[in-house]
Length: 291
Image (cartoon, rainbow, N blue to C red; front, side, top):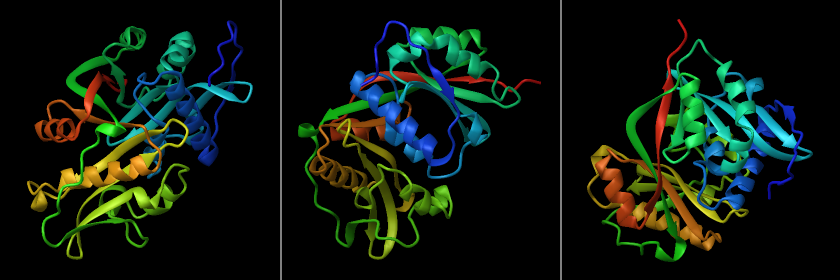
């Protein structure tokens, strides 16, 4: 658990490579244990981002620690056409060290468009984002949770359809994430090939979903999921979710989590139909590149 000393002197570091991944994962696990429904991200989210080299500058990642315990971090991730800013740690720790974190954000990558996702109930971050020149977008992102006992039962699969775990070779997500995706995922401490599922029609991969079981927090995350357009509308998404959640339950997860965009009607229907219930909502806050 994170330390709660009244006065804390933090030590800054800028870890790279797997050391960065290990520290940020530990930080987010501590944050989840500290606040069961707080924040936005899991350790597994950062590990999913690791599937491709998305760090605009590996040495730019900043983590502040109390002794050997990471407390907060400012993480910068390259997405398509913009830089993602994420302030990591428990809500309480991020609020306590807000000035430190925002000073790091304000001077970083000002020549590029930037964005961060902030919960609608996070008044501290919202106020700081406004002062730093960020503006809220209209689209709403919901975070849904489910107790594992409420997971759906496995439906029957259409004829010729089967679900398999990743067994090596060409990864189903190569088209989305590049040729190195299997190697990068294998570097992640929480990644498990048996929770990396593909749905096949004969020998053709027509969809996939990656499930993450965190043995520390006992949270099971679904990220990402896709069914090819040619096979949508056949109930394959429901089957893939049910199969993955069953595996998460067998892995000891007690709570299940997924996020969706509220204007994506199909996603809302799929996830709420599976039993997820939104507990928080968030928006993307964006800052234009300096001219």
